Image (cartoon, rainbow, N blue to C red; front, top):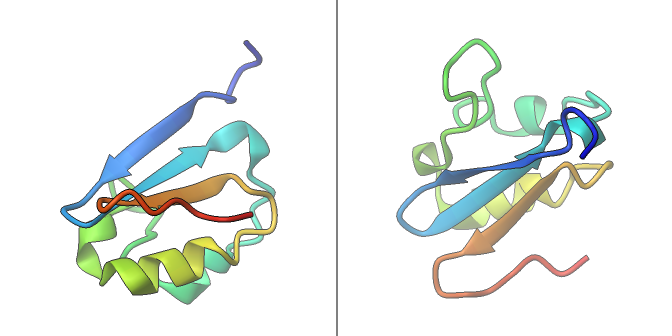
Length: 80
């Protein structure tokens, strides 16, 4: 497996966000769109519980590289 291609999961009660560093193009759509959830100065840098699942999903869908994805706890997956 290529370095940085592992997908990490960040879970909240109603949504799980996954991130694959090897795909990230650093467009910063996530950080600009929802800084209370996506904050590179914090660890973990993704805290999906800091906003509603709907808002998190909306911002994740803006990711141009597909490095970010989500799954709602009720089983609804992102459609891309």
